[in-house]
Image (cartoon, rainbow, N blue to C red):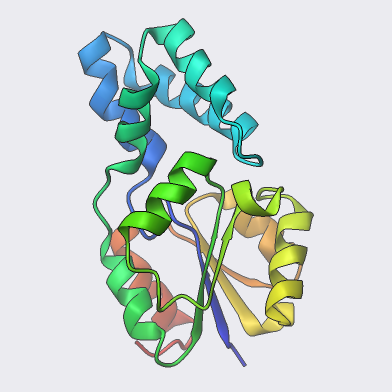
Length: 192
């Protein structure tokens, strides 16, 4: 029986932040949006398991001339998706959890600027020291929740992350269109 719904942040509870930032900054700096998104993602992956994100900021400035504070704003000043309210509604029936790879400044911003009180637990890679799709990330989440894998559904926009969760016995939803999560839940018998 499903007890826990594990939500990724970017691409699920809010728009995909890397793409969103690239679309905001690429044209301003004359940079190809796809190329910028790839580089942001590369540097972000290197920096999302620790509190030190200086490599990310210095890389963005040296590679593209984008100042750190501007890059940080582009990555955090995002609207919430319809799924944030959906998670709030579901919190009356299920334990809702955030399980997300985030650099420390993004984790801090999310926690300071959004009402996350209805989430039972927050698992950000910058705080737990490992990231998806690594098995260690999912093992830590399950252990800290005291949950069996079969009690959980994991929702992410990254297929690699969902495939790892499924390999561990966690049901997974690979969310391709951000506004179709409610339909995906219904397919799994989750009543909204």
